[in-house]
Amino acid sequence: MKKKSWVSLTLLFVSYFTFGWKLSEFDVPPHQTWFVALASILLLDIVLSFPMRKTKALIRGWFSSDIGAFLAIIVGAFLAVVIFAWLHLLATCLLLISAGVLARLDIQISGWKNWRAFVILTTISLGGVGLGGAIEFWSKTGRLVFS
Image 1 (cartoon, rainbow, N blue to C red):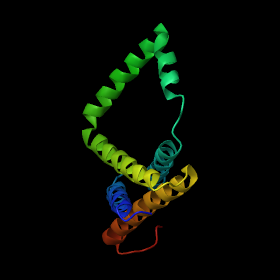
Image 2: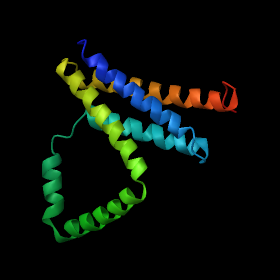
Image 3: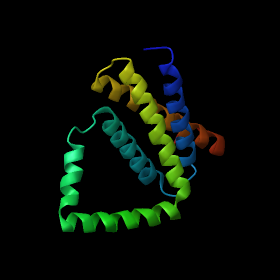
Image 4: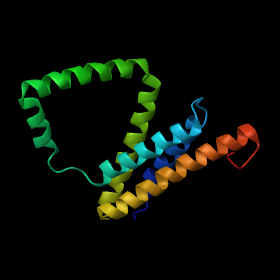
């Protein structure tokens, strides 16, 4: 790997570390919170590592019918309400996505294949979330074991 790509990977780790810290502070049952977080991290890493080649044709086909356009407008309006209601969550998600995209671009410039990029992104993301959540839990309770 190039020397400059370590900067983007460090930014990725720090952003996910902060996300893990914030995630551990929620008043939601931990198994639900962490399951959704881990699933979304894996989904984001899959999307970044294995881009869809036919995305343009899929979007064009969706908007060509009246039903598809109508559903897109309804979903867009719903997403706009959710975005305005939870702006702090949107900012966190945008930070994680942009850090992931930056790291993926550096990995791609280094010439690594998709599977290796997926493993690197997933390892750094999950490591950052786990370490951030564990340190926040330890600082709050003084225990190292979740029970």
